[in-house]
Image (cartoon, rainbow, N blue to C red; front, side):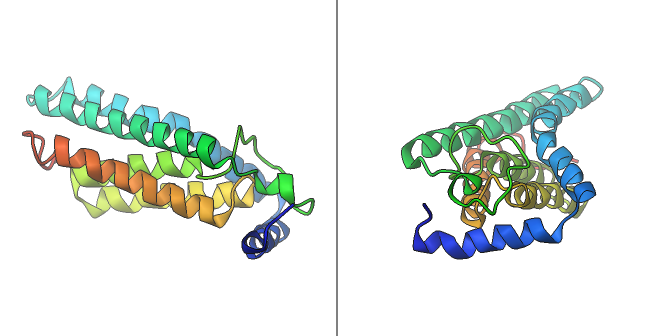
Amino acid sequence: MAVAWQLPQLDFIVTLQQSGNETQVKFLQLVSDSITIISLGIPFLIALRGEFKTEKVKTRLSFLYVGLTAGLAGIFSYVIKKLVSEPRPYEVDERIAQWSVGGGFSFPSGHTTEAFATATAMVLLYRSWKVALPAYSWALLIGYSRMHLGVHYPFDVLAGMIIGISCAYFLSQVFIRKTSLGQLS
């Protein structure tokens, strides 16, 4: 049973689902599923890139920073999910279809948390719009997909954004500011 503050969010999700089509749903499922590949792939690519550079220490610190950021964000998301125990939108409103697998509870969106943690880590490392634009576009699309697929409320996605960005910023204070990492080119 939905509580009063959830009703506008549930109506929003219903509107998203009614405005889409099968092709859009399949695309958003692919986007949503990309989280693991991209969040794990980016640190791997940083490490691989470093094998061909002279600054191997900087590359290893970058690899560690992005990997730890994604890991810390995932842990925070998991712990909060267990503490809050919010059911998913499709579990409380029969109008909402479940178009994606959502394991466990709804709040916060783990996919969005990971996406924004990874995107922000990359932006803080490279400090370039050429990194920021695709990174944040992908992260926003992940958040949108989770709502459209019926597994998260808008507030879950917003919380995931905040947690992911915060984890990346917090760890950047250790890895970027207090080491020789600085800005990568």
